[in-house]
Amino acid sequence: MKRILIVGNWKMNLTIHEASLLVKRLSDHIPVHRDIEVVLAPSMLALQPISREIDQRKFHLAAQNAYYKDEGAYTGEVSFTMLRGIADYVLVGHSERRIYFNESLDTICNKVQAAIRNDITPILCIGENKHERESGETKRVLHDQLTTAIANLTEDEVERVVIAYEPVWAISTFGNGIPAKPDEIHAAIKWIRSILGDLYGEQMATDMRVIYGASVDTEFVPSILGLEGIDGLLPGAASLNYAKFAGIVEAAYKMLHSGQKS
Ligand code: PGA
Image (tube, rainbow, N blue to C red; front, side):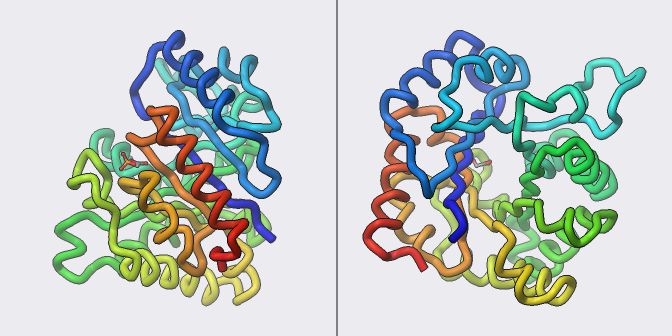
């Protein structure tokens, strides 16, 4: 049985001090759950101090980004190598990085490879934007973003990647704070797994972790997490509020233990 993965993407929010306060609050409100893995993604600056403060039975850490070269003359960048021992996960291909920082499919492919090379699990974010959705291109976009990102990995390496379906139009900052409808999420997750199935076989497609992000909040947890094939959630805005984030974890726990999770 896979553990449910819940990743809070704090984006470019909170000073080191504020981040530390949030971790304390979360620690007070989130118990250790054997079947749920909770991951926090603070800013690059807060990662290291927080890595010393967290109760590692409760939380793991993710970086929100890193550069794909291991070291060298790349002013201003932080490499995956530097994150070893601090972060277990790194977000790669988030739509904000694709849109605001012009990250190309090639860059994302290099970052996924660098994460694996440095023993950090990439959380590969893929998702169509509003225009692509309205012109019926969702499947093509998901296919292209997924296959190009994992193109240079061996099968064993691919299996370690977490895929996050994040429809750009539903992310709180781009959309209206309402997640995609459960049937839309289900169709996308099914499509992602079918791409993996064609490439690597059914077993691997079932075993890999695929999660959903975009306007996740406590009230939506049962309808999203109850869908077949969803292994977790990636909330952004809601993860900055300790009560909401703890509520998301609690709702996931309740689902698991009420037998509603397939
Ligand atoms: P949101 O962000 O939950 O605020 O929509 C999700 C994300 O961008 O990862």
